[in-house]
Image (cartoon, rainbow, N blue to C red; front, side, top):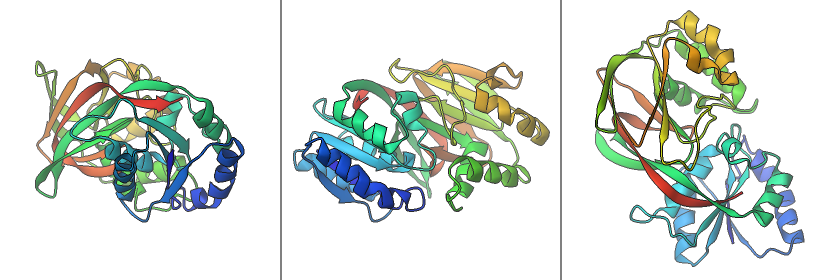
Length: 301
């Protein structure tokens, strides 16, 4: 088993907790090697190195960004070896991916889950988008969002996360709300249904939670072969503020300016610049295509 640790996650809290995590794993008699990330995208490199070295259980220790990087490292030529299992010990400020998976956010309980869990096969999302004028591809496990969602993540990732995930997200939300303008978007679902409208955000969900426990897609299922697509329409600033509690409760889908769809493929074009985040990391901008990859990854839960 190879354990990939991001010691900088949660403002360094993961690095401080790692000795306790290590001791729990050792006490159970499990053999493992640990590698530590040194910067952005290093976890992807470490995951690929672990695969090349023959490891078949690879564990991500950190937040949603660390997990996303490890997942991208496990995919070779568009596929994950079915003999490879992904383990997760969450330690980031948000750790929203594990909420849908049912993995405990307490590291002690998560270590127990890792050591005694069984592999569960889940879907992955593949994104094709634009970054600095060139087309790139990126995989995601949980939630990706375009528009206001991307703008907030861009600001959150420049802020301190010492207070956790929810407070930086909400503070960035209110700051960005002062200047943000809704976008004119064209959303195409399954190459058939075409939607043209003004929108605050287009959010493509494999999991249910994002942004530090916002229940953004309450009907999402990780292994159903479909995205849950939530489009927040031409909302005003006051409407956004008034409905934040509803998003945390998962009751926002009944709002007349919020629409929910299910699709295997989603294409988004925008008249204005529209930033894209995936699993809490800013990765590019529209035009963007999202494709579901059914039953792609085995996760220990």
